[in-house]
Each structure stands twice: as structure tokens, then as C-alpha cells.
Image (tube, rainbow, N blue to C red; front, side):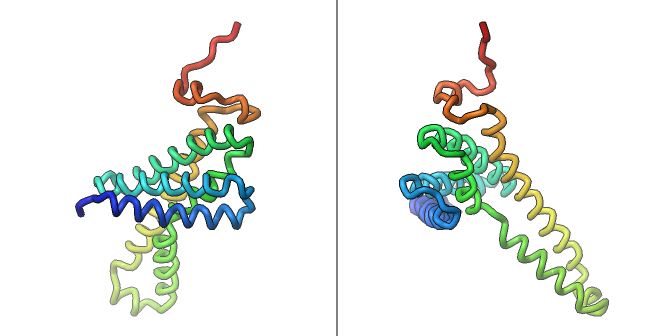
Length: 175
């Protein structure tokens, strides 16, 4: 598939709308609703682009969720809100619903009896694959979002500066 700017903008727009909708459902203050949508759109677009470059869905999801976590910390600092106000609605755009659905559907098919399973010998493999992928993606989302919080661990996000975000793990010198 050839990647075009239209494909990226379409993906961003859909993810923006999803992030915005979940921000509304989570009760995000009106003045910052658009930020949750923007962060969700950016995170999902990074994932989309990396998948198109064959980096794999787990790696792409990790990259997108790390970006959501880092930008969420910075946005929370600027908007004087907790980071979860941005990160939760934004990461929902990357929840692996299709794989979870396929896992459940396969589990339901298992109840049809041994005859059905013997006619579909790959059923157990497909269930295990979809379950493993679902769990891996959910763990990847959680890890990616918390990386920002772990890197910039403060009692208050107002203590975080943009210079500190770009400096990364380099420890501060205490006098």
C-alpha cells in the first residue's frame, strides 16, 4: 500500500473524533476537549504510519502510546490538569477491539462441540493468537502511556518543564 497524506489525514480525523468523543464521556473540561482529540489523532496516526512501514502492530502501538503519554504530560502541565484527562481518551483509539471480538467469537464456537472443532482444526490456534495479540496490545498501551509518567515522576505535573522533557533521563544536579 502506498501511503498518502490523505490516508494519514483521514486516520487522524477519525482518531480525533473518537478521542474527542471519549473525552466528552469522561467529563474532560470543555476548554481542553480538543487537546484530547489532537493527542488521540497524533498517537493513532503514528501507529498508522508505522504499520504501513511494516514495523508491526505491537511496535507501532507502543510508539503511538509513548507519544500519547509524553504529550499528555506536557499538555497537562500547560493546562493545569491531570495527565489522565488527555491520555485515557487518546489511547482508547488504539484499543484492540477487533482482536478481542475474534477471541470471544472463537470461544463461543468452542461450545459447539467436538465435531465443530474437528472440522475447524485451526480454531484453537486462532483463539490463542487473537487472545495473545489482544493482551499484548493492552499491555503495550499501558506501558507506553506510563513511560511518560515514569520518566517525569513528580508529585505535581506543574513542576515539569519543556526543557526537562527534552533532556530526558539526565538527572538533575542537587546542590
